[in-house]
Image (cartoon, rainbow over all chains, first blue to last red; front, side, top):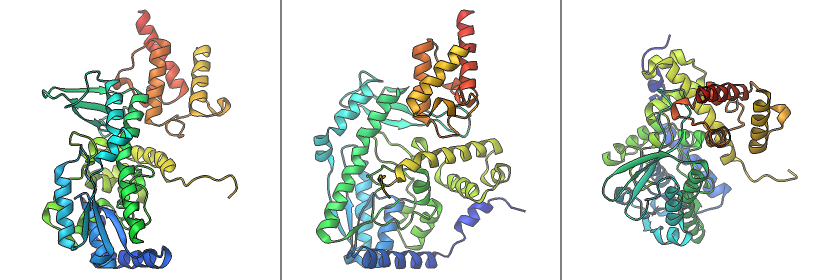
Length: 325
Length: 84
C-alpha cells in the first residue's frame, strides 16, 4: 500500500554522499582516462543545474580544473550573470565573461526572431518584449499549441497562436543562443585541453528539453540521471547559497520572463518529477494521482505528454546516420 | 465522405512521410508518432485553407483530430454547421 507523498519521499531517499562520490569518480574516469582532457568548461547560468555541476566538477577536478563561462545576451536576466558569478566566487573557479550579443547580432538572431513574430503581430519591433507559452496539459484534453505573448513598449500585452512556419522560424532563430554558447564553451575547452560539461538533469534529458547541437551537446553530462528534485537536494548537500537553492527554474531565453513549466513541462518541477518517476515505475495514474495531488485523468494526460516528448526527443538524441554501420 | 477521407489520407501521406496503405482510418496520428504538435497545427491550417472551416483551440482535441476517421467526422460536422 502506497502512502501519501511516497513518490516525493522516494525521490529524496538517496545517499547524497554516495551520489557525489559516484559522480566524481565517473567524471574523473571519463575526463582524464577516456577523453584525455585536463578539466572541464561549463556555462554558468546561476540556476541550480549548472551550479550543482560546477560544485561537483570542483570536487572531481579541483578549482584549477574547472572554468565557468557567463554568457549573457541582450534578452538575458541580469540576475543570471550575478548569480553565476556568485557561484564561481564561492567555488573559487576561474570565471570568464563572454557577451554573446554581438555574435547573435552578426547571425541575425534578433532580426530573424522579430521577422517571425511580425507574421503574427505586425506591429512587433524595437522595444517590444515577448515569450512563448504553452497552455496547461493538466486541465484539458486539447492539444497544446505554443502561443506568442508580446508586450508593447507602452505595456499593452497581446497573445496569439503562431502559424507553424513562423513558430518554427522563431524557435530556429532563438536556438542560435544555445548554439553560440556551446561554440564558446568548445573554444575555451579546446584552448585549455579541457572537456565540455553539459548540465541537463534527468527531466530535461529524458524529455528533450534542449537544443540539438546547442545545450544538448557536451562531452560529459554528470547529472542527467538525477531528477530535478534530487539536484536541488544535492545543491543543499554541496553547500550552495540559498539564492541558488531558492531560485525558480527559468529558461532565460526570451525577452519576457518565462518559467520552464509555461514553456515546456506540463507541471512545476517537483510534481513533474513525481509523475516521471511514477511513469517510469509503471505506477497507474489512479495510484500516482493521490500521491501527487492531482486527479487520475490529469496524471493520465501528463503520462501521454511524457510519451509524446520522448518520441520528439528521439530525433534530438539521434547520432549522425551512416549508410554503412 | 470517401473523397474527403481520400484527400486527407493523401495530405497526411505527402506531408508526414507515411505510406498511404500504412495509414488506416483509425490509427492515432499522435500516438503512432506520425505527427507531433507542430504537425497538428499543420493539419489545422490545411483544414482551414482547404475546407474553409475555423478550428478553435477548444476544438483541437484528439477526438476531432487524432485519426483520419476523427478528422472526417469533425470536418463533416463543421461543414454541416456552416450549411445550416
